[in-house]
Length: 448
Image (cartoon, rainbow, N blue to C red; front, side, top):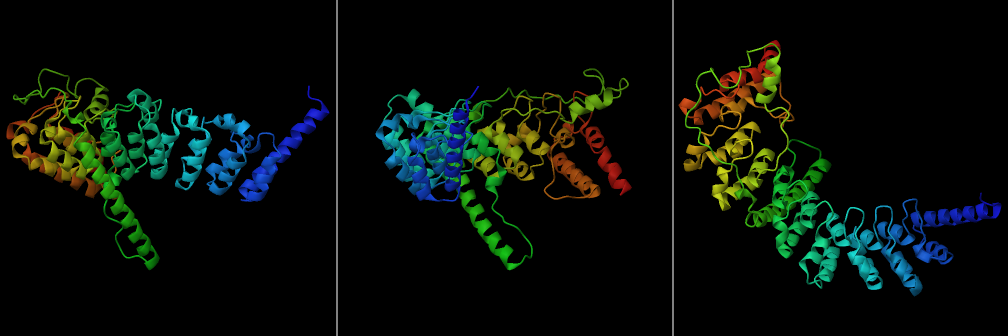
């Protein structure tokens, strides 16, 4: 049980911390330095409930001049305590890496405690990794120069990759720091082929981000303020687009994940009758909806695919186009479901990529004949919808149905005549599957 004296001492410490915290929030630097001097641990005093020291808090608040003064005033006997970590495992150097304004702080912290360079937080991130996550190129360059002194590749990798296998290249792409990602890929080229915990390379992650490749701003008549804002937005979009495309070109020439494929079994004999094989959807009460669920691709699990397939699903036309320019043979990839690029482009309603592939006369002769593991031809795929697919614009059911029918007609024209009546593993023709898939839409369009 605590004595009254102990309780008073704790209350006094809390009061000092409150005063110090408020002074920091109010940017009262003189008071902060004065209050720190009253503590035995000076600026290494624990200030927050998350175990941040005063230096942590001031660094994260981008109060660079204050941090430099506090570091200068720190007694040399306290330098060994600079390795203190907060609840997230971040050191002062980790927090300095979150802002470009803290470059001088990072240099001073490293000078006083170079061992912080190797320390990792609870996610396994070094300060170098954290500088990438926040897109701070100057601090990244400074810290990257320091790790050049390590000769062993294994030791260097500890700085470049965190515990879940995510590398600094992965995180730069995820955070959309494309210029920095390009610098990283150039400096640490071996990271181009590194895969994260989901088996994804940097190029595969980039291929899942269609937003990075949008060049157009808003359309329509708007007030001047909105027009000015839109112009700035377009400028940013153009800059980001250029950076993303430059990165994509660099990665495509060095990422060979497109080479992995499943066997391309030639389905030279289309199945035109409904007898034998898998049971028809008409057999047995209650089987229909369950079987249709499989036919429509519901419950599809995300799988690791080539950058070309990921770009196709996401609608990253620029990446798809560049991949086919650099590695035209990538068009022949078959995924674990037995699908080729036409199956994927059709399912995800990517008409531009469909047209891009259509121009490749020689591969098209083989691609149009491919049947996936469920016996679906490319024409069947028109009736296989993506659960979370949302049109770019909200349209009524009649308009949607017309678009679906136009899509069916387009694919029909490239489907070999003897595959148009081909039946899949559920004994459905492409037309039969299409009508079942669009039954609700057709009813809604009629009622409307």
